Amino acid sequence: MFFDLLTAPFTAPLSGIAWIGEKILERASTELDETENLNKRLLSLQLAFDMGDILEEEFEEQEEALLLAIQALDDEMRAAEREAAEREAAEQEAEEPQD
Image (cartoon, rainbow, N blue to C red):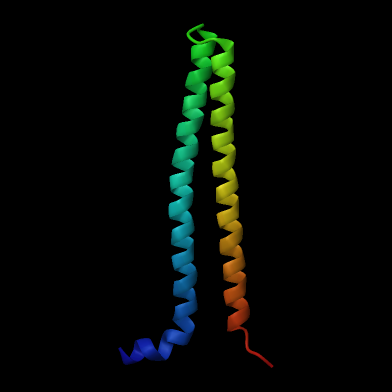
């Protein structure tokens, strides 16, 4: 316990960065799964249209909805990555010795 207290100024920032990395990985994995599912639905929709199972109007409506959902997930992931990078930069600035 005493050793942990002595090394905390050195290990705490690393632990914090590791935790942030784990959270980004969890979120990215979830979003990639969601994006993959949306892409599969889009492919299925294209196949149904090509086979003549759905009308062109219905295809275009569903295609637009799926593409918008994919774009929204992509935008969310990029925003999360930017936020994490900004947070990490702020933490590194706080760790730098002040003159």
